[in-house]
Length: 225
Image (cartoon, rainbow, N blue to C red):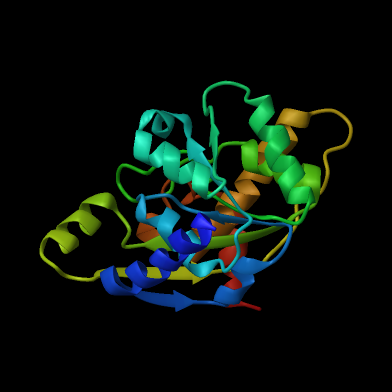
């Protein structure tokens, strides 16, 4: 019952503290058995996920460093969020997430694994591509600007709404891994996911993937459908 109240609070708070401009189909974020992937530049993105996804079975992954913070630990428990060890093989959490995805849950995750210090896209980690290839879940890319912690703090201190822009792309799937070269395949799939995110971002925000060949292919397909 408490989760309903917390989600209700998010629905009230977000429109008050932000002014959001969305490009794309926001309803697409709600599909069953889907992994929503997004760049990570600030904590506000977590609240935005709960604001836009109208369901209680969101699979939210939080970094292990937040687990020691009592309020965040409590809130994560109420929202059924999961902490993950980013630096070691966390098999228990991986199994739990796989099971929830296969049961039809929707996951929102930042493949970078941590917030970008300069707002540009960082190199993605392989965990998301593993989950996508293992479950066959749809992967829906999204991109956001305006949620940088410093920007949010400054705006709120001056009692101003935070301007946020969100782009939502088209879903795709990652094929299962067969045969050898497992790590190479996971890296290829990770680059595919990250380039789809980069293609939604302004050029100056594409960071690590700015000159990636796959990104150039995606951008060319947007220009010449």
